[in-house]
Length: 172
Image 1 (cartoon, rainbow, N blue to C red):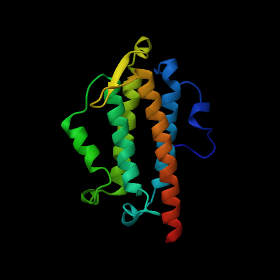
Image 2: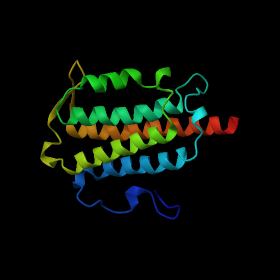
Image 3: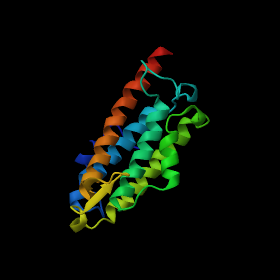
């Protein structure tokens, strides 16, 4: 986890064994992981599924962050989603998932970031502009487009999670 005196991940220099063009994606995912782990430390499980102003719960955001990384990185590999991935998507934020703890959801996100970083480090930069179809409709994207969107989407939901958690903690 990031120490308070360290700069943001992108200012710590290049990551070893990471292709240069994918450094920004890796930096964003690592930054998100650091912030998410700090934010969710000691977050009470009983607030995990509370909604704020009718918006998504912290539990949903944690599940969604994990699921989106998994799905986008699958598309980047050129594979369609498995039945398990589709089931995970359908279950994100549903009441049946209330048995998860904050620690379990944070751990799942951390593991997904690790898998994403491993995939990024193994990516051949010459394949970054290769076409990839997204979803059942095969919407057009590229490998770099999917990786970039994964970083952008992760940071967007992290921002929403931060607001949700802060509001919930202030209510107590």
